[in-house]
Amino acid sequence: MASHTRRRILQGAAVAAAGSVVGGVGPGFPSTAAHAATAPGAAGGSGALPFLEGAFEPVTEELTAFDLPVTGRVPRDLDGRYLRNGPNVLGLEDVRAHHWMLGDGMVHGVRLRGGRAEWYRNRWVRSTQVTRKLGETYPGEAPPDDFACNTHVIPYKGRILALQESGPLPYELDGELNTLRPYDFRSTLEGALTAHTKYDAVADELHAVAYYPTWDHVRHIMIDGTGRVARTTRVPVADAPMMHDFALTEKYVVIVDVPITFDAAAAEAGAIVPYIWNDRHPTRLGVLPRAGGATRWFEIDPVYYSHTLNAYDQGDTIVVEYTGMPAPFHAAGRGSGGPFATGAPTLDRFTVDLRAGRVRAGRLDDRPQEFPRINESLVSRRHRYAYTASAAEMWRAYESVDGVLPDDRFTNQLVKHDMLRGSKQVHRFREGAAVSEPVFVPRRGTKDEDDGYILSYVNDPDRGATDLVILSAEDFTGHPLARIHLPGRVPLGFHGSWVADA
Image (cartoon, rainbow, N blue to C red; front, side, top):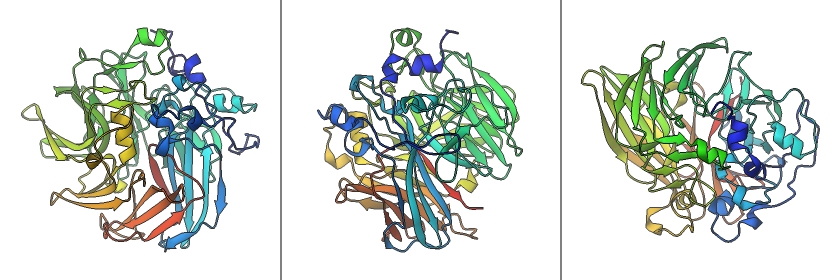
C-alpha cells in the first residue's frame, strides 16, 4: 500500500480525463481566456448523470461583473466577501470518468461594501493539472498530492484558503479570488489536512482531523495562534477509513470512525473513488482530549456522519449535533456520477455519557437537510441557533440514478433551528430555486447570538442565473433583505464563508 498516493489513487488516467480548464489570473499565473473547450452538460444529457445536469451543471466561463443589480437593500454593515467553493469539472471528454466530488474547485464570490454589491467573480483554483491543461507554466515546484481544492474556503489570519481533505495542501487565494500558492502553515504542515477545520475563536486555535489512504492512523492537528502546527496526535485506526468531518468541544476532539474504507484492489483496478462501504468495519465514536493522549472509543450503530453542526461539553457528557445519512452510504456512487445515499440526510444528535460509558443517538429533525451552520464564534461551545439547507435537486441526485422520487418529500428551503425551545422556522423557495449552504454573519457590534444575517446562493429559475439572498436571522421567515442578481449560475456545491474586512 505504500506505493499508493492520492495522485495515483484519485487522479489516475480515468480521473485525469475529468480534469478542468481554468482561467483565473494572479501573481505568478499568466492571464488566459476564461472559458471551457467543452461543455460537460451536453455529454450528460441522458438524465442518467444528475451531477452534470440541472442545478449541478458546471459553468463554462469565469465571469467578472461590477455594480450588481439588487432587489431590496444590502445592509450597510456587511463589509467583506461572501465566498463558496465547489466542484466544477470542465473539459470532460468521457462522462464515465467523472465523479462530482473530484471536479476541480471553483470559488464564487460577491464583494459587499457600503450597501452595494461591488462585484461578482468566479475563479477556478489553479492546481498543477489545471495550469497544464491551459498550457501554462506552474510557478514553482509542484506540491505533493496536488489537487484543485474544491470543498471549502475559509478566512485564516488575513488569508483566504481553499481546502480539500486527504492529502492536498490548501491553496491560498487573494481578495479577487486569484490563486496565489499552496499554503503549508509556515512550513509546519506535513501530510494531509481536512476540508472541515474547526476554529476556536476563544483559544485562537485551528483544529483538523486528517486521514490518508496509506496511513494506519488519523491525525488530530492543532494550529496555534502563531499560524503554525503546534501539535499532531496520531490516533490508530484500522482499514484506512474516510473521515469527512469531526467535532470539537472545549475539552475534546470527537472522531467518528465510519465504515467507508479504502479498497486497495479497487485502486489498483483504476476505480475513480476507491472507497467502499465496509460492513466488517465497526462504526465508532472516539473521544480524544484536546491536549493529546489516549482516545476512548464507543461503538455506535452504523451511520454516515456527514457534517458537524457543533459540539460542546455539558458536565460529564459531550453533545454532538450533526447531519447524517442512513447506512449504507456509497461515496463512489452507483453509476450516476456522484455519491449514492439510501436515504436523505437528517439533523441528529449524539450524547456521549463519559461516566456511564455509552452514547445515546437522537433525531432532532427528520426533514431532508444538510450543510449545518451556526454563529461561528460559538464553535466548541454551547449554541442555541442553527441553520441548514434543503435543496430538492441534491436529494434527488443522491438517492436516485434517474432522479425520479416522490415530490412531496423534497423542497427548497432554509431552516432555522432553536435548540433551546426545540422549534423551527422555515424560509421556503419556489420549485427549481436550488438553495445552497446558509452562512451566518453577525451584525457589527452585536452580542446576541442570532442578531445578524443569513447569506445563501439561490438559483433563480426564471433568469437561469443565481441570486445571493440575504435574510435577517431574527426575521427568518420574512422577505429577504436583499437579492443580489448575479450574471451567471452558481452550481450546487459545497461550503463557504464570510470573509470580513479587517
